[in-house]
Every structure is written in structure tokens, then in C-alpha cells.
Image (cartoon, rainbow, N blue to C red; front, side, top):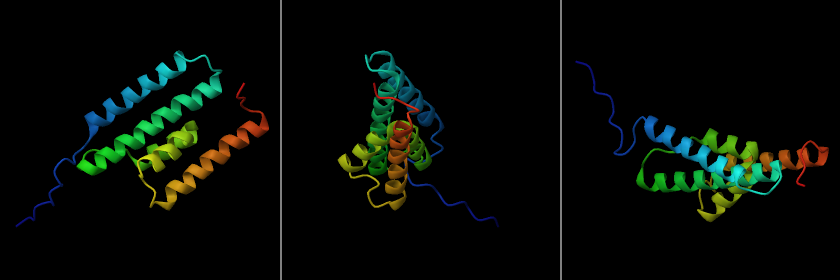
Length: 127
């Protein structure tokens, strides 16, 4: 007799539809910020990704409380590396989310140093 697969807790499933919808909305938010700002490209990029990353941390915290679909940790790390590190720091401390995960501190430090390095090299400019 075959054993039954363990059941998933309520509210946790594939997450395909919410995942696609969430990232589409984040793309629209990012595009809105880039299009509607008077900042130069790199500061607008940092602002847009900072807001998206902050919202992603907020959403992930809310979903963790209700045991719903979660934002993949790798996506939070990639957002920080792409330029959302300020939103990552803000989301981590504002929502007290992922503060016990050493890897999040390490990735946010790496992302912050990476963007400071890009500024120092002159690859990107804030003006």
C-alpha cells in the first residue's frame, strides 16, 4: 500500500499565479518611478529598486505571518544586488524581517559595497 504524501499547511501552494502577479506589479511600480522622476538614471534606478525591494520585504513579512506564498530569498538578494539595497536595509529593520538570518546581512553588505565601488570607479554617477 502506497503512503500518502505529506499535506501542505493551509495557504501554501504552488504560488505560480501570485508570483507572476506580484512581480508584474513590481515591474509596473519600478517603471512608474523611473518614468515619473526628475532624477538622473542611476539615482532613479536606486530609488525605484529601493521601493520595490522595500515592498517585497513588506509583502514577504505579511505572507510569513499568514503562511501564504513567500518571496524567494534569492529574489530578495538579487533585488539588493541590482540596486535595491537601501530598500532591503529599510525593510529588514522596519518590519524586523530576516534580521535573524546572517545571510541577509552578508548579502546586503555585499550589495551596498558593490554599489559604492561602482560609484568610486566612476562607472555610475549620482548627478
